[in-house]
Length: 624
View 1 (tube, rainbow, N blue to C red):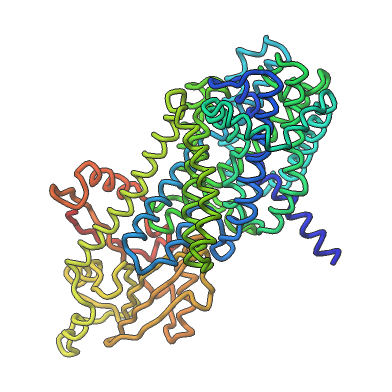
View 2: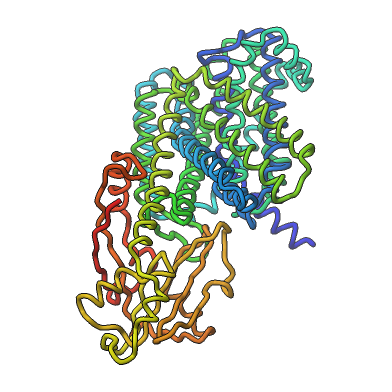
């Protein structure tokens, strides 16, 4: 029993750094935005109590009830995140093509907005931490942006080394951070305990009834206290639901509430502190250490978001929404720790451009809320589908609960729409760009496979017309052809017959399929089918969280009668040259975008971990 408790404590401590880094750094800018942003509230006791009441109930309803209480239960065989949720929702409605298309669109929109949130998080978090130097002395003001850019550049530069080495420090550092948040909060509350009256929802409700427009605008700042809430769900596969729940209720929620209420008490006592209530809450002697600790905490929060972006890219590649990319594993022991160079440098450019364009955390806060609330809306809709189709909840039970959550989400979303001119346009534009890439690649692949299937010969017909007396000469060895159509003759095999006029003694046609589950049991990895004339058909299955390793998977074919010697096997791959065509199923500009993505995809040789000296590529032209 003691061992189990120790293990759970260790996992919960690790979850502090990865799961709660983003939401844990919100005190740096949330209250500051509510009372100092473009739609700031008056600094009188009634509005301060109302704002803190909204903050309290946002954390209780959105995080504690919705995400920790219900969304974490929607696990796709232990995995979370919006793409995993989309795959789970789709599994329950296989019979309805229209509903499937709607859920796919919603899932991709949510993923795109989550990516926009991932770009903003490092920028606003690190910038808000470094801005603490301005509180110490105005002399540091010209150096805030250069220091922020240096920290961010260093953070992205070390990504290729992985988080295995420094990851062990994340939990203890964040434990110190949350402990500091709680201590500062208690110190602030002691100055004006009246702030504890904000626990009463009457203050929030009276504010909404008295000044509905101002209350709606205030929610645009209040939503910043739940930024990073999607990380609770996205990182569930790393830690499990119980450690995340224990860390939330045991430390994170109390520390955040104490700090927010401490900042509120400070404003009740000294309204001029609204320029930066977080840092002004600290005593003078603790300011520089607090800046250093806040910078470390925001780096950890940014690291978690960047790692999440790598994981999302990996899932999108496996599910067929992004082209193959170079994915590097950064740990031999920890599964799922990957580094995607192209994603890393794209994020760096976008984050630095954001910092230079917006210039301050207050300006960036206007861009933050729209991405967060848009993702929350999509998550609620997908979770409702899971509750109805997978959990088999009644329409009344699922409808009432998730309608309540949806009303809250849409209210927050509407409160942030007004921020579009101040910066909310960025996550919208960034999300539109990501969505176009995802949907263009998926649709382009469907069109390309349809064209290949139309021009392919039936494999069964080919084998029927392959008489033993006049067939092409058979040469020793095994030829393995990779194809997406297991029922057709691979174009690479036809080209080999056309140019080399031979068939190998044994021909294996391999199709790799990625299922809508995170992992596939090793015993179900391959399915082998023996065909006439020493032809074999092999299907290899992977989950969307797994890395394909085809040579390793093919070793399991021996149990089904197909013994493969890699030193006597040649892999034949088709390499298509795509030609755009007017009047196709996609507009010409999207065809050209797809072709550009196709050309820049990493090779199938490296993606499937094939031995390069055993691979032969045969090209063909294909009109879209």
